[in-house]
Structure formats: structure tokens, C-alpha cells
Image 1 (cartoon, rainbow, N blue to C red):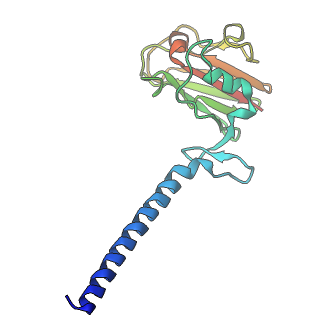
Image 2: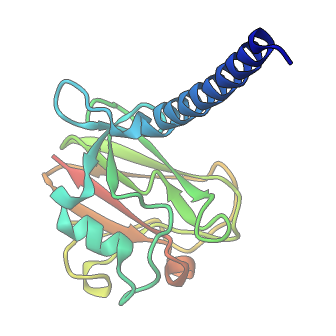
Image 3: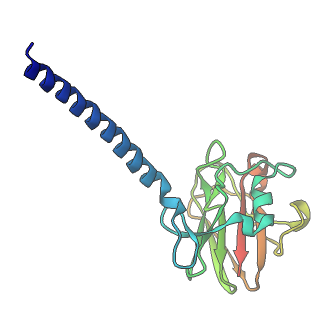
Length: 191
């Protein structure tokens, strides 16, 4: 091989190695962008949720964090990511009952929301995960809920609805009675 042939061979290897390194770096950067969507903050310093909705750090409401992660009363909710979905601008916020989570359809979706005082929240059954209900019973939970309400006996029918109007600021911690042990818990922060 001539000197020029060797130089071209080395240059070609160098180019291919450099292109490979750049490709790996670019792939990592793009993956970071795709995963980093939740870390961006809006003009009010709030994080954006996976679906683009603004969120509030759960750590700002220790009772919510404790309720959704502790296991002294029921299981921990494996869908809770440490954030509260900010729905304070929504006039009719909805929570799914029987959303996917906790090894089946045993979650509320979203599991933690913030609403403005005077807002009516609507829970809608998905028809998944057997029978469910919505209960806020402060004495049977962790004693931190400012609200008490119940949708009644557990039911399974899709499109069943239960509504409750949150008139005053506070925190509502709630659960599904049949699936509390699985971590089917929720929270409403009222501001």
C-alpha cells in the first residue's frame, strides 16, 4: 500500500469513528430532550407534566406526598411521580376512576390535582379494574384531609360519574375502598 493509500485509509477510519461518536452523542442528546419534557418550567416557575399540563411539586403539600407514598394505610400509589397536575384554570376538571396503574386498572388519573376554590370535580369510571368508589374519610386515612365525601357503594359501570364541589381552600385525600391496599389513592389540592 502506498503512503497516499494508507493516509486515505486512516482518514476514512477517522471519519467513520468521528461520525459514530457524533451519532452516539446526538442520540443521547435527543433522548435527553424527549425525557426532559417534565423538567421545563412555565412562566410561573411550575414544571410541565408529561402531557404538557403544568404541575406543582408534591413536596409543597406534604400531606399529599405522604398519602400517596406511605403504606401504613393501604399501598403506595405507583402512578404518583411527585407532582400535582395544576387544573386551577379548568372549569370542569375530570379524574378517571379505574385508570391504569398499581398492577392493573387500580388508579385515579390523574392521581393528584390542584383546583381553584368553588370548582366541581368530576370522577368518571372507565369500566376497567372491577368495582370502584371514591371516598374521603379523614379519620380512616392519615388525618390530614380537610374534606369528607363518598360516591357510595363500589360500582363497575363505565361512564358512571360522581361530582363534588370544593368550596374552600384545603386538601382532600381520597381512595377507592376495595383497592386501597393496592394503592388506589388520590388527592385534590384546593387553592
